[in-house]
Length: 309
Image (tube, rainbow, N blue to C red; front, side):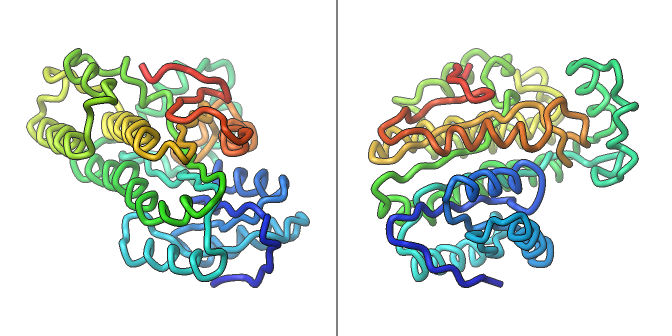
């Protein structure tokens, strides 16, 4: 389902993955409010189309919906073909779509979970403990987490690279997390390897993720120094951070950065976060709209440059 928008040649074009709710929807709202033509993507056509209508009702007319399942190659190819035919370029790619890599004991979309009284008096640490108590990590959810949060993001990026290169100021923002920081790894050798961007390769990242799944299945994660609790999410985000830096080095003509939005009330956090989706999205949009010639290969935490470690 696609709307008909005729944009002037100098209009910036953006794609936001996972754009139908939460941080993704607010990134779409904020980019469109800045005069960017936004292609809002989502797995579910009905939900995606409803999100676009919601934005249009708010006066943001330059928003189009296009279906995208980031783990499905034909779906990615259809989006790339559409963008090429309609716009011939892409200026901003915000890779926001993600999964928690866990099973939820509480239903993330259960309205009762959003009750602020539940979290009254809880600091971030206690809220995270509550979230972990209401989740379960299995081999299947861990595998899905890596396939979506790392490989899905990577495959979308690869497919849209030629369109980003056709822009005079192409930029990629990978929505990251404080849980992707290397300080959470207890394996010093692996930590150093993932931080050695001059030597690290995508092939080695594949090996690292394969080893993680083997250790997860064998129950040896802790002894091997992997992050514990929401392990797959943390490992996938760390791998995505590393891939972003590899990409930035390989494509100096692009701006490729990672943005941690903060601890946000979304389905992934079972609405336990401290920030609203609007607040979290602003920390992503700020990076997407950095002035031309800005930094690349950088990690932004709450809108500020920060270390990957």
